[in-house]
Length: 136
Image 1 (tube, rainbow, N blue to C red):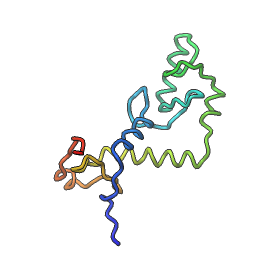
Image 2: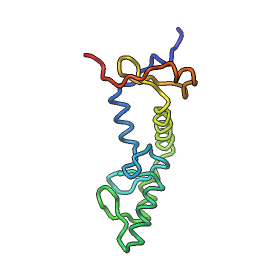
Image 3: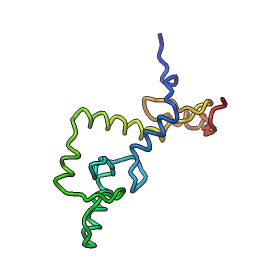
């Protein structure tokens, strides 16, 4: 049986949920070196969180989570971000897939195909993008 990568179609709502979960609330981009800031798991790009902490320190403020304002303690950051190696690998795989999303096209039924990598130039030029929701 031949497997066609174009036939594996994730539900758009699932993809959108993953994108939301892995989007930095500060820069609004896919997370780069994700860093948890508080016990509630609010996560930011390492660089974005670092800039936020530095900015607050320069103003003489106590560093806090940009979302919930929970106080950030340096020793707690290490503990929060320790996670298992398996969790880190899983998270990086999801982030890689989401980064590829920018290179994929929506099919006629509104779903996004999962691909092995970015499409060729010929594929990009010939494939129409359909952002309309599927008819039900």
